Image (cartoon, rainbow, N blue to C red; front, side, top):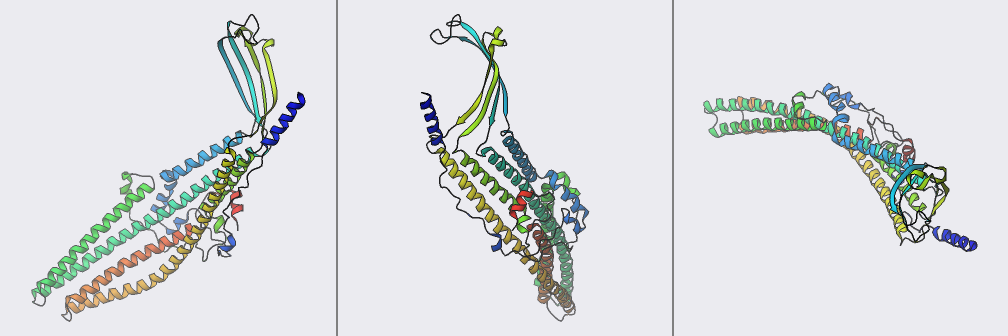
Amino acid sequence: MKGLWTALLAASLLGGCVSAPDTTPQVQEIAPATLGLGREAAPSPGPGWWKAFGDPQADRLAALLDKGNPTLAAALARIRAAQSDLAAARADSYPQVTLDGSAQRRLLSDAYVIPKPYAGGWFWDSNVAANLNWSLDFWGKQAALIDKARGTSEAAALDADAARLALAGSFAQIYVGLMQAWQDIDIAGQAVKERQTILNLTQSRVGAGLENDAALEQARSLLAMARIDVMRAKARRDKLVHALAALTGQGAAAYDSIARPTAKLDAVLPLPAALPADLLSRRPDILAARARITAATRGRDAAQADFYPNINLAAALGFQSVGLSNLFGGDALTFGAGPAIHLPVFDAGKIRAQYADATAELDLAVADYNQTVLSAIRQTADAMTDVKSLTHQRGQQQTALNSADHALKLAEERYRLGLSGQIPMLTAEATLLDARRQMAALVAQNAIGRVTLLLSVGGGVSSAQPSSVQASAAP
């Protein structure tokens, strides 16, 4: 009989130790050598890069991004959740000790193994025991789960860094937009003055019989439209103030404290001249995607370990008795210890399905990583193109602005002297107004483009990246 039980146990072990199915990942990581990265590393601007603009108000508001923004608060909460999962996974690798006790009033069977005088009577069935359970982790499942939780925790921390970069980009865009709105107010106000001058000239010429009433009404219409432009620019300014307060976690009480920006938009920022060689190891979104590949890989390893026996060490020490008075007596002492084995014999394909799902999760993580890398390359290249193009456009626009300003002065003088009609003067004024607006927009776009380029290469992240992820992300 003993030989029969031994044979059955051996057969169960062989049946339980089935090999994993031939389910291999189908998505490959993109090779860094194919990305066309440069040979030089990107310059490091440091976490306070916006201080180069020399605006104390920008410094004050930027400091509030980490404190009051709900988006960043959610990212930090996800970090805490991931760290808790990591702590729980680590705890499962240590021996687990519990203390259990119970006392039940039971009618003991008279037709079972219970002897007299207990058989057929009501008694307290009591036990108190300390239990030990320790997973020996022969196949590395628990270690893989710990690594998976660690990768998820690192990804959450890097997501918070990516959220900080996104917030910095939004802040720069809104703040520069606020500065442009103030400039639009100035431009519209200057247009009001110029069109008031045109209206006065037209009235003088109508009074002298040199111009008709249609020209007078035209001048009045243009003046009213310029005043509307002032109101529109002020409304846009107010909306940007509201957006800036909300982004920094403030309400309507902060609106009056946000004054006109004084940032020097031409401040020099440390920008790369080509796609940096260290782009993959600098951007937190790429590093987070890399950490998720690590987590998915170890999750697949843990799923593979389910095909093998799970062996635990179990022990119990305590007291058992019929009746409360005998519970802690020497005769009630009980002890047991030994291995506990769990064998996957038949589960209708559940473990195979879980392994296939873990493999699909790994493919998804790799695909997301590849997409993140390609998006980062495109974003950085687009930002570099924008900076170069806007710099050249600004030079040409300055030439156009100077010429338009001179043309309006000449047209006004000719109209005043009666050497030309009203239409050339109005055309010159409209051209100058458009040139001013385009110049203000180009200055703002150039500043935003340079900030975008700085952030697209991961500039401004203050927290240190996990060394394991950073090393695996290096080309």
